[in-house]
Image (cartoon, rainbow, N blue to C red):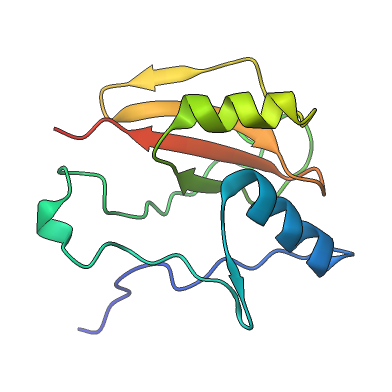
Length: 128
């Protein structure tokens, strides 16, 4: 049977696409192309720590507070290589950062909002 093999893209509705793209480039280091921001997985997946080269798709209950207190329908989780440095840079830039942190056996988590007010999740995998 044919099946989905991964997430091919994430699309956000915004009143100002250039502004939102610039925010992600400035604060998360995502480089725009003519087609948007392309996130490439490492060519040598076998060399990566187990559990770090994946994308999770997970539905949440309608009334979850995991996305924050508003009615945001989608939250994107970004895998990062240095969560403390990104959180510090966002804070220093005056961006909204949730003071809550979460440490799990599979990684560390933090949350922030982009310039459109979308809550995003940052995940630094712990690896092996």
